[in-house]
Image (tube, rainbow, N blue to C red):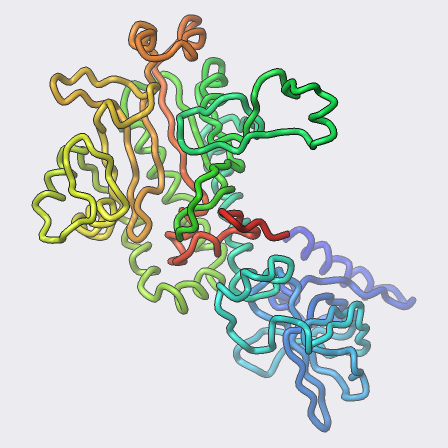
Length: 467
């Protein structure tokens, strides 16, 4: 916005000078939203379509700043053989009011320079063709030129900013947790072990580079817990890695996690409230700042998703206990592949049924069996069933979106389980808890995208690491 204002100030300033004016560079979004016509404007981008008529040449160009293209109107004499779909161009001319209702402004070209030609015969994306997402996934170096991926990347950018703003506005300190770690955190999945190259490994005489085995992180939780001993509210947002041999529509080997930790909290409800507020705040921001981009997904992939999201944003999320969830599943008329029993983990088919049973709204499932969850979750001390203060947030079509818990801060309880956390609990330990949300699953849900591989720029999964 500041850039656009600066551009218009420059235009007005130049208008008062008698000497030759220098063209003001505008992005496509700025040109389309310009409040008034302007002389000497320069726009750069990639050609999305070319249409030549006897008396006029039409181009549509895009620079990634907007889903909408800017129409360029030019004299046919400016056409050349390199001016093709996919070519990079620099257009200079006058910004004028468009006679068409669908657009505010168009660019009347005086010069068109082809910066980078494009061979349309070998270019895998074709003009005005809606390519399946599976097809463009084959071209990681070019898929960002596709309308759907372009919209997705703008939405990712706004969602990332919205998440950071949410935490900053609520007094959280952003922590850069390490990608290389020596711990497995929660036993969340198979790890990628880090090794040096063959030559370096031989010279190291079979010793570890870090003196201990090192891995790519599966979660920043442990490091956040360390920081929560000095800061009451912390969060991290970064890549995590799990070496699961899965090519399902819900799993990636590399994905982004939003994780937070709160000190001085003894209530699982406090954690759940932050999870709900984060979801609603980020989603409202994306819907308001990227309406056209979101509309593209809702129109072609999930026609009813917009109405569902609006209802979800207005209402409280549902909360049920694990025990209640199992009883609901046992009474279901549906036949499950995995029979629901108390003490068994909830499978994806169970999670989706529970969401459907509760009215296709997000559902918190709380208080899971002690034996199902990692050692660090707080013991509820609730008798024969023996549960921990854990919570999973389930959403329609996806299943688990967030997972969190109160952490076990009581030293005697941890001594019987594991020695690793003991020092953190000896020196000024306080009741605390936290959660993690898979960013790609979040985008999958709000946009209605079927495959998680289509909501990340460069998907990594078993047997695939393109580019």
